[in-house]
Length: 527
Image (tube, rainbow, N blue to C red; front, top):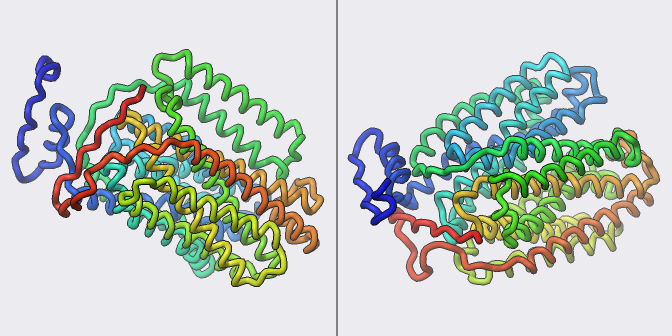
């Protein structure tokens, strides 16, 4: 202990051979950190790709099997809970994973999340009733809530913000393959084999991910973090989010917006959020550190990213419905027509991430992306009908390209402004508020569609839209695109107000060799 207060001793060299990674980790916990080489960082990220693929694939593979599940259990009424249960637990648990990883380390928490996800997948595959399937999905979401945010956190641990773009291609490939291959794989397994295979497939993939992740995460040096878990604060935040998500999911569909059930959920959520706010200022170490909440870059980057993510998720839900009901494409054609939007967003995120290390004013790329998406959605709101299909696809490609440029800029800007001690909870909170933003946007766009066709709710938006007249639908979708454009305008305003700090990382003069040590991250001060 006395040595730590004086001059730092040199880290002892670990002997070669078996157990080298463990000894290197201990060196980092007790002395000077050992920086990962770029080859080691790449190996870790490639190992994490399968874990990312598990979380990303599950969000796309289930949708195509829902009708078959409803017929198998003779229960269509509760079918929406198969999606809702996963959404509730995954969203609510995301910041908890981040906080726990700040306390107990990334590897242990990541492995725990994968194990819970596998257990939930097996429970879903073996479910004898719809109720059991819904409970299995809730358990699966409890594990899945940590897969994406923990991967982002680990990447932030081992790669400096300035260097992070060079690995963006790996992450983009995972999202591209899951968003395009998920619906196709789900349809094939459900139609030609059995719907339970969409969950059984997670067992071998999950076990491989568990073994691979356990191995590669041993390469990451351990860092001792002295934090305490504010359990009451965590529970207040989780239940406040669940009440809000239930209100947004049920409002206008299961119950009218002004029903006592929906209003009661909103009131309960507000009360819980007030309790959480009181907990933030009354406890010594709150669940969300005040230093993170008080950081203006964290606030503006999170809000800007939430607006962008909300619009992207909203478009993936309502654009196929627009193609099917207004443009008169088939269900399969509507799904294929969504590929330009999703593919362009992944491609743009990859390109933007790589360019961030080369461009000094990196915020301008997100500004241009927001502007492009706003113009595209504005065009669709004016000409919701009358445009040819190639023109609509070209506009959606431009919108996707614009939205994709925002995600790496907001994520890296937020992580660049936060100390490594709080990287887990900060990244988890970013994903948490993105999920809430998505739920709010979907609820708003759904309410616009219902209002445009003169319906009061009680059944799904999709069912009502397919029975409405074409003029009413065209009128409703004009305002859907207009609302999405206005949400992006708010996101652009948050981006403009976000301070642009130089990205931490190596100097720009010379590119490091493949096996050269990565530049250690200098932690920002949190005043």
